[in-house]
Every structure is written in C-alpha cells, then in structure tokens.
Length: 144
Image (tube, rainbow, N blue to C red; front, side, top):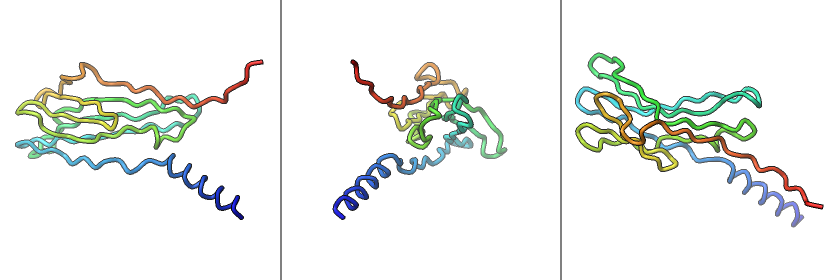
C-alpha cells in the first residue's frame, strides 16, 4: 500500500512538472490611431522529420480604417518533434511603448525586441531571433 501511494505521488509530480502554465495575456497597445499587438503562429509537427515550430510577430494596424500598417517577425522557436510542443513554446510576455517612436516586446526567455513604430523595422536585435529546438535526453551507455 505504501508503494502505491508513493508511486502515485511521484507520477503526479512528474506530470505537473512537464506541463506549463498558461501563456501571459498581452493586451494590445493603442497609440493615437494605431494598434500594436503580438501574435504567435504555430506549425504542428506532423511527422518526425517535419519542420515545425512557433513564430512571434508584432502587428500594427490603423484603427480607423482597420488596415494593416506592417507585420514583423520577432522570433522563431523550432520544435523537436519528439517532445511535447507546449513545453517548447515561447510566448510574448509584455508589450510597451518605450518612447514616441519605439515599441518593445519581451518574450518568455527574456529577449527584448525594439521596433520602430512607423516603419516596423527591428531596431534591437538587428534581426529576428531563432531559438533552436530542445534536445531530448538520450540514454547513457556504459563504457566497457
């Protein structure tokens, strides 16, 4: 009986560790007649060798005409198809106006992206970030 209780507790803690909490809610930023919002797109892993992952985008729209001003890719997170995607996902964490011409997005890994609000050009970093897929741990073999 003690073994069953211990096994249940251990397996429950492993399941809790593997799941992630819900991603942060990042509200759109409205400046004058423009709305800035962060969007993520996901490509699912359909086969073990397929390219899959998540992309973080910053989108600017003109509110009065509901037209797209610009859209820029901030980062890409490649997924390892052998692992659950929810533990590999990277979501935007915050969106704020830094000054009259710059908006800043921070992702869950702590990377800051500064974007020109008029042109949609990435100021910092100089190009979008590519996070490589996570490695799965392989069984260790004993040397003989």
